Image (cartoon, rainbow, N blue to C red; front, side):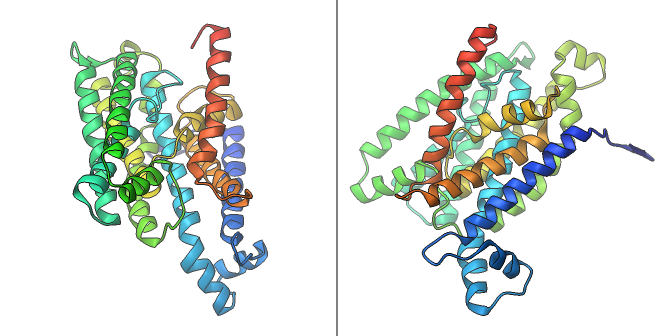
Length: 337
């Protein structure tokens, strides 16, 4: 479709996939809001969201439980988009921020704040963002060689950085006081427990800037997947575009980690699952983001319905580990892993 200087490529299957994923994510969020010691039927949750609920139910929904669902939706959206960006840049299904150190760097920043400096929620979130940014700068600088950054080199250096930061995180926890170590270990699992509007609002503001920037980069990402030489021939400034995309991707994963902790495997699995549903080549940014939101909120719903409550990071870790094993084994059989 074309209107004046704006053109949009219409893909019916991709649009249908996005609609279904958005409906699944929003539907799961409604059930998350209705789950708790005082169960609320989904119809009553929708009635409250439409401004027609009673005062008591309205307080429980909008003040106590809705922020958790909003953080889950937005953090999953950010992780899915970030994973799609980095997997497209590296042209590697394993090139997710989980595995190349950016999420771990964000966790290191938060741990230093919790265990060394001390401080409240805002300080921890700020340190988490700073940790992701510093890690990205170091990895990008080390991967820069010969006037540019090679995707495979970025992944390999990122994996090494992640291993070193994991070791640092473990050392920091072993040297901490018992109470601080418990708080840090709980934060590292990735959880939506206790999330309020103080986490949801900053995350929404960050995504209001980063999501449009990410979606606007879809054409450059598609051309970049053709190879650097082909992209240059089509007029794409490869290295400048790659630097902007890295900044956008790091901003997305840093914002999500600051709000929900380092939730594993959503950024890895969401782009691949979205690609399989749409059955098309390319970065699939919007389907990947919506898939990330659906995965995180559905994982949170599962964690709430288990006999023993567990953080959502445990659920995504178990499911993501199984997916990673399947991805590596199937990729190995095809000779592409």
